[in-house]
Image (cartoon, rainbow, N blue to C red; front, side):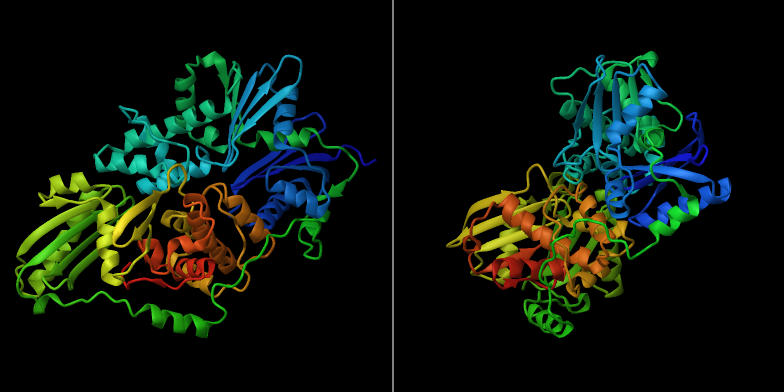
Length: 571
């Protein structure tokens, strides 16, 4: 046997990769933590290159752990250990005296109960990944601040507000309501951390006592002191009741290194060559593929022309005479302003993200309207004004509008303009989804997404941004993808794993985008509406909402229902 190979523990999770090198005594010689952005092999190889350079190609043994690490281990026939077992080994060999481990990862949350008899009891989030690292990322996106600034904001908090952490996107409803009430970002940031603590403790502690001493680990709990404080406050812990060891973000990798055996000994360069060998496929399961959104670019072009028939009539401001009417939709993530004339022709429209401040966004929109009127030498005479959406009451009061109307009626009024015989209206907004059934001109049923909003606008936006694509380019790629991936209809955050799995298999960004388009529609039809037969929708379907600007989503709906749908040029 080669004397004293170094031991490598490699933990590849849903969003980050961690590596630890220990010697025979367990001393940490090297460690690194990095977001892999779905570039798994490249990230791991860069780690190994650093190790090879630092330790002069010293012999090594390796053990892999983590949700994505399992696929690597299977593909390259490397030793694997479940991450909870690895963390438990760390506690036993390095940090004894722990009764409970609380671990928050990119897409998962775990509580491990270490019993006096040596047995362990694991509780882990299942079908929902609300209350994890990616959940915090999405809340930071909504507040339009970097994740790194969330902690500094939370330090200035004076009040905690209730936020539902049950779904990574759906909780935006609560956050949006707080923003609409002009609650400051410091209080919202602290409330987000509190929501994560409540979600983790309440859902993962059934039947078990979270007994001190508690070990906090995982990237979010290591790097965000405000999140740790939320757990400490909620559990009423004193300083001696918990521990956050140095390198708490790499504990599973550290534990994996301590379990290494000497059956397979490499030098670093051999390990790098193994990982870079594209001919090795292993037994990684392949994602199911779906039919193309469009069979050709020519078919797509013809379809776009046909969809352009339902155009909203518009007229320039400089040709306007008579009265005008103002409508404002203060939505969950965006604000829309429309001005029409007495013939229902559109004189002005404004569409903008709220960026955490709907009142300011509306002010900017109205200022743009004022500038356009001045440029056209027109003085508008507003005869009526109305608000709708999440901020209906706030906007009506703030801008002294005549009326407020619930969204359902607003949707139906607009749909009738496109198709007077409408039988079904599907509106997919930034974080909500509404399905309205119409029979003989009467709204007889309405369904909305309740506890989960996988498949809404921010669902696709979040994935597009995570892959460094604009939403528009992402949609275009989806329309022409050759092998769309079947990604299911799971939680917005939790689906990241399936996306990353498909990327590891060589799926293109277009294949992912097309798969997500199918998922949006499947989520609506089968999770929200629980349809057994598409005929329940009727043949006169009208689609609305910003998400329906995405041609791939609209076409996926047509393919899955076997029905042509109506969409205006400004859905």
